[in-house]
Image (tube, rainbow, N blue to C red; front, side, top):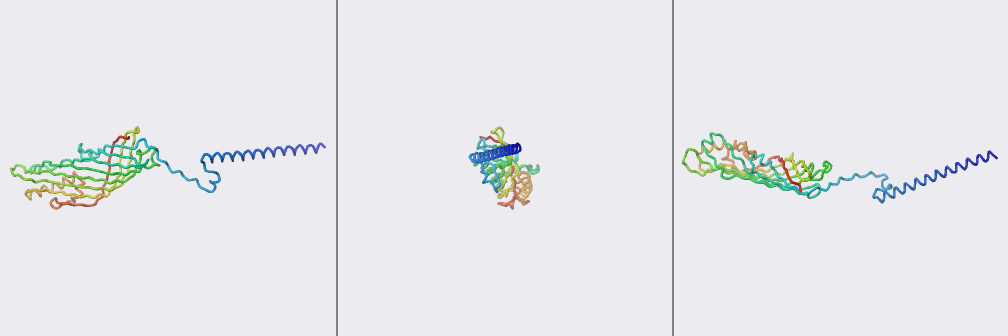
Length: 287
């Protein structure tokens, strides 16, 4: 009897342990089901949908801009032509959170031509008119994965089209003579550029911008004319012609691109396609 009672106690004990294990497994299953249900309500992907499927990468979403406009001043023409009256402004407007359009316009004055002293002893040059304009239209794309702040702050790539137009005319007077003449040196230049650009714009304190256009290769169309008019002595014209070409090529690389070592009397109107380059530094106000 004792032996039978001992076996019965062991059987009861095992049955109780099995029941506890069964209850634990049931509770664990119910907890897992509740967890999946809660996750589904929170717009998580259901467990059944993730089987055999790879998790899709979420595309980065552009941050909300601080402001959508930037007005900028471009001092580059001042530095390039050593003329403080060269005034250029631009306006940039975001059209999406990471794309923008910009327009630029400015007034240009060309520096005075520098001639050798021997020419100044023969001819006096009196500026009659000189001016120029520049306009440009830019498209920019601010690269989201590379930028930690909202556009227009950060690295950008884009495309542009720009136009530069110059015109000058200098009146000539013979030195040490009473002869009157209406001779003049004149020049015109038009440049249309089609290119791409790479740059970085910094926005400080959410208001002030520093725009560095670092790389801007372009394919450019040059057209213009350069010459001497009036009834000057042929020998004098030849001397002026030679020195003028050298001076223009040195001071105005854009005009020099049209000359190609030719004499002015044979130039007249000329045009050609050439590769160009664009760069600039701008400071502005973000609003």
